[in-house]
Image (cartoon, rainbow, N blue to C red; front, side, top):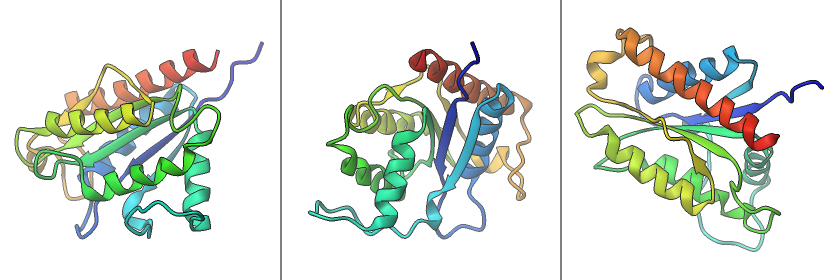
Length: 188
């Protein structure tokens, strides 16, 4: 029997910066999943033009198409910068729009493994991971146990998005691999 191809979508990005270290980290994690045969897609959320979430009877078609793509994925990887001890407002707003999946069967991110990355200029990246985990749980997603908090990002990333520390590269690859394996188990 042929093994199902797992689709992993990564969400990351930052507005107003020359480049996003979170997006760069996300690409390494997605590469880890891809190395194991997953089909991957990276979505730069800074390019999405979503308004601030508010509950409506009808929603813009681009948001509905985005939500449906997330729903159809087997797994997600989220990567956010740390802003004041939490995930970015941009990431939170994108995740808030997944409310449109409430009436699906199963709803929201049910039975979907989610990997978490947080990039911080200081040493508190785990706070962002914890905040994202709470949002994912509220959306009924399953966070994988291994997470990657990248501290002192200004020392880790070069201006081209490459990473100077091979241990962090291996951690990001490992996260992608774990997400792919978890998704494979959920889909069997």
